[in-house]
Amino acid sequence: MSKALQSKSPPPGEPPSSKDNSGRRSWGLLITGGVGGTLVALYAIATPFVMPALRKVCLPFIPATSTQIENVLKMLQNRSGSLVDIGSGDGRIVIAAAKRGFKAVGYELNPWLVWYSRYHAWRDGVHQNTKFYISDLWKVSFSHYTNVVVFGVPQMMPQLKKKLEEELECNARIIACRFPFPCWIPDHTTGEGIDTVWAYDLKANRHETKSLEMTARTEF
Ligand SMILES: C[S@@+](CC[C@H](N)C(=O)[O-])C[C@H]1O[C@@H](n2cnc3c(N)ncnc32)[C@H](O)[C@@H]1O
Image (cartoon, rainbow, N blue to C red; front, side):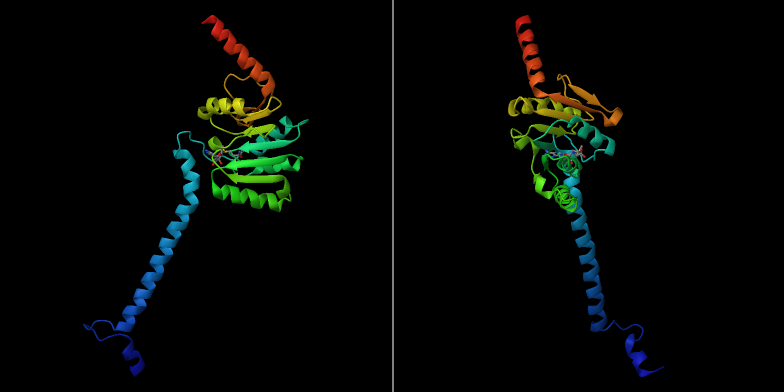
């Protein structure tokens, strides 16, 4: 056996040299760093998707289907001006509306989805007509918007109805995807099953709500 080969491994029973030890330590550090870094990255990516499910009103990210988006666009025919998607997810409704000439805005809690939406709007050439904000829908006012789109969950609809009634102008149209608003009577409905979309003209529904309140008060 040559001298070079003999010097690589220590004779049986003797501890490994300090050179072997430091090599192993470097590998150990590299693997620990790699695994730790991957876990931190996974945590940072996954947390914003999981958090909405842990809030008082659980509103997870479920992207609208293409048919649902087409149905929303049908409800926007003959409408113009500003539009907001409340909980804008990956931004497809905002982008589709911007392509139809709306100044469209999305409010979304998940920063990854907001960054993705901004990139998507830029890629589709509508970034000048779109804005995406990382915001809690309960902490912003929607008073500037004449068209409001929401794909929510049934638990949040009564509270959101109250908020929109307080904030929006009479000429506003509200479009609900998949889950309708309680009490309001839709002016238009399209689609079926999970793709159903309801449109409410606030003017008519404010009148309806007021009449109901008056009746309730008189009956009492
Ligand atoms: C059902 S998804 C709808 C996504 C999109 N509008 C669509 O139709 O494809 C609801 C979205 O609302 C977001 N969200 C949940 N709670 C929120 C809050 N408090 N403020 C803003 N966005 C919220 C979720 O992250 C999710 O992306």
